[in-house]
Length: 132
Image (tube, rainbow, N blue to C red):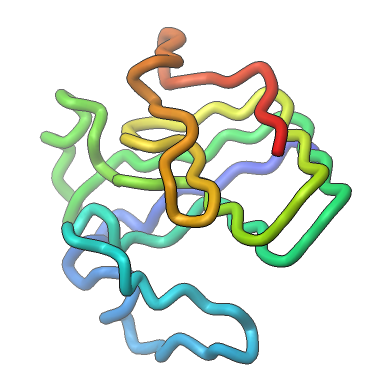
């Protein structure tokens, strides 16, 4: 992947990622957000890597600017709980990953591995390299 960009839907979390009219389909490994305890967790992922290996990403901007069309969440950089979901995968290299207003930049098998607060870099939070 090269120079990828996503923005979370501005209306989330009203409805959240599950309430937008599409039922998760296990055949496609759609997330069901069963582990979520908050509404900011039930937002669309910027990137999911599931059951994969030998993945390279060069430059990614994955942004969350709103919560139900409001931007108060930017004051605490917490519009969304998680942005990149890695599950049952190996040999991954994410170069130049920037997220905006996300608590956990990267989760691996459900655990936060890269807190945005430890990687603040001007506009957002940036990792030069994340390896798994």
